[in-house]
Length: 259
Image (cartoon, rainbow, N blue to C red; front, side, top):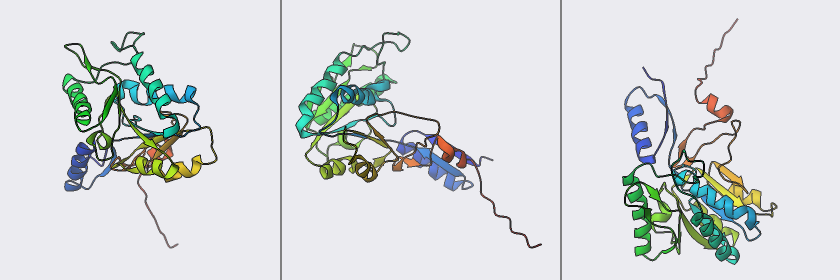
């Protein structure tokens, strides 16, 4: 009796939903799935804007956001300054209960998830990554994971590929635009991305070359009801918001009549 399913969640469960829909009445399916969104920081970026922007893109809601900017791809010339700035921002964040007005980052959804996030970090460090900041679960009970930055991350590391879904930012360094794009597109996901730069002349080319359904410039997590949000690759298909979202719930019909 169901004609349409709209699902938001993990890629693994999304596959099951699609399979079930195909085995039933071939119902229409719209899925918004996982993400591993890159944040590309160009050498001319305004760091006063970029540092808090990059930090909030990953630490907002404890990183439990499908479009969280979890992969920092930064130009070599400013990498040290930017990473230290984001680390300082994370260290100064107030963690606590979500209903406390002073709280800037709350807990993860469950203790088991906090342990899973920490395992991603520990496993990365065990194979050569550098723990720059954070990396610990706070307290003997609860689900509070420190804002975490992991450097020296190689493309073949699990933490670079998998959606961690926590406050964990990986750092990769580039020297030219093509290397930045290669790193950004080296992912099974294609949900969102951001570019941080003061030089807009090259921005459109870079944005066009990123394999993602949404690209922000000098911002991240910026939404509007008129703008469609939807992923490429294993991030799903179909859009939410915009007129495209309405179209997902409509059917086309052709009526031809000879009079």
